[in-house]
Every structure is written in C-alpha cells, then in structure tokens.
Image (cartoon, rainbow, N blue to C red; front, top):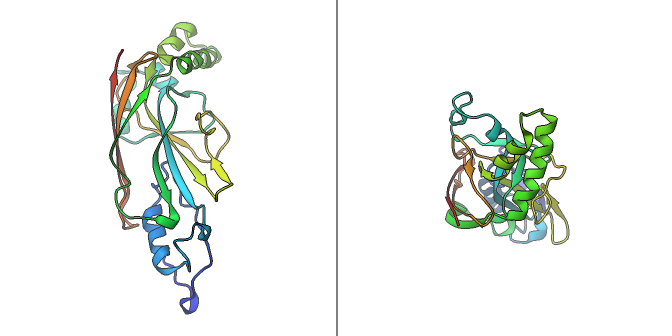
Length: 239
C-alpha cells in the first residue's frame, strides 16, 4: 500500500505483520526500509517496531508422503521448486537435526539487498531424532493402513526430503512468537506454516552421524514490487 501520513507527521511506532514462512518473503526489507525513511519518528529505536526482529530457522527433514508416493506414479519434480507448505503440527514432517538460524532481520537496523549470500551450514543427522521419527512415522503409517508400516517407517525415518524453514518473531526483549517449539523445532500450534522444498525426486537415505552440507542463497530485493528468491542446495556426506 502507498501511505502518506497527514501533514507530514510521523508515527511513534509501527505494527507490521509482513512475516512469511521464510521471514523476508513478504517484502519486509523493502517495506520497513520505506517506513524508516518516511513514516516513523525514531526508526533506529527497537521500541518503534512491533515486532522488533524477525528470524528464519532451518533444519533438514524427513517427509512421510515423499516416501510413500514415488516415481513414476508420483512426480515431485512437477512442483518446479515450489515448496510444500505444512501446518506446524503436521507429524508427517520430522526434523533430522537441531535447527539453525539462517535469517535475522532487525527492523531498527534494517538493510537492503541480499540477506544470506551463499551461507554454508553443516547439519549433523541426530541418531536420537532418527529413532524418534521412526516411532512417529510408524504410528502414522499404522493409522493410514500402510503395508508393513514398521519397515516403511524405518526407511522414512532414515531419509531426507529437503530443508524445512519457519519463522520466529521477537516482539521486544521479553515477548517472542515461536511458530515451532524453540529452540528444538518441535511441533506446536501456529497459524504460520513450515515450508520445505522437495530437493530430489526421491528421498535420500541418511543415518545418524551423517552430515548434510547446505548452501543458502537468499536474494531479497530493495523494491517491494520485486519478489524475493530463495535457492537452497544440499549434499549428504556419509560417515
């Protein structure tokens, strides 16, 4: 929206819900930069913004349906890079590693341009998470009457489908909005979705102790009319 305050007056604070499942995807950089210049009296004061900071967390994940529906019957490549969007309580998505902060945007110190230029992060596949995920997938597959749910859950629990991402909002120094449990990334109720691009036609086998090397390349334009773009590449390194 194009907003001009009457008489050139500026606001004491701004409330902005422009936070996507990847925090910057709804144009926060360009929008808050414009508000800095035109709309807020003390834009460099964190108390001028609600929220004051937005973040994106990421972790490799296993996805039950990616394991059940495989080529040639189901062609995941038709998504063409569009991520799958999950309710944050969807037990069909399970994390393999501890989450890592990949995007951190302070509205008081807003910048323009790329936020994560080719950031490389190595995730360790956690064997305890794998065991827990196998148990959860087993329950899901039993409810869905999947043939041999125990075997299917072992395969699914020892696989990676993509890199899951979700937002976290810091309203001030004391109040946070967590869309997944913080810091471990567990499921909880939230109206924000978790997103995950499917990164291969079929799940890639992993096991506890393996390493997943990921490169995050986030391009966030300074113009609000231009969409952000997000590129993620990953390699599994076995032990």
